[in-house]
Image (cartoon, rainbow, N blue to C red):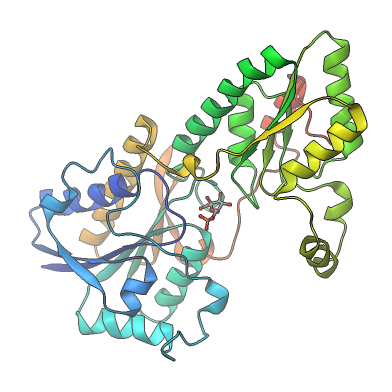
Length: 358
Ligand code: F6P
């Protein structure tokens, strides 16, 4: 008999349900008797002992379903040791729930913040297995996270649609793609949709270089220019500010986001008509793409295998086309960002894509 707790934490993404289904199907198919405690709305459920008993049937028909059947919420790791609204110690409450229910392990699906908390629980002696979810693909220790490919599809389609209208009107279009710290989604969706300029947090842009790229297109007879801009894109100037000065600047920031700042500068410096489109949370919504369904199912199956072998303290990740187990202590607190010198960036530049840096 295995008593397994399960939760999904942080921003949701596609294929969370597919991954949980993968774990549960593997356990049931092994013939092992299992009890599954589904904690509601992320770590909050574990703190409050708010759970539902789930059976194999709850995981049937959810392979293609977006979102998470368990609900999710954010619980910033930096606040982990601050008592909650009821004055309780969050870590102690989570440990208490785990021990009270006599769980064998917790399966935790999440991104960066989630992994920090998961690792803390591991350090506190709980048996933990994690699965890497996020549309940002910025988790260290895995080449890929589930949700990422589905989000690439959606962001790509958004930019594809913008192409035709940009062409009709001869406009400059900015599509803002999700990703505050990592530019994987913008880079991939930008390349897939033939964006002319890609601005990502890892490569600070110079507005004059962006304008030079637009002018180069104009001179070549192009009627329009498309920019894929990450939420976290940053100008070279701003990237040199101290954290404190940047925060001060943001307090008086007159734009809804960086895309509007870039749009304003382009409009003022070129006189061209500029429009901004923000697909936003659409990128995290809807059904997982086939790749993510297969990928999340594979990771889920491997997580099930680890439970059956009583191997804990790992994230199930993907390296060099193989599903692997990565020690949780190595994953927590590290970010996987785009290397500005990466081959893919160089190849994009060879294709004529500007990153606003040269
Ligand atoms: O989960 C990752 C992410 O979608 C980022 O790409 C985005 O910047 C952020 O979450 C948005 O967070 P929220 O859903 O809390 O607005």
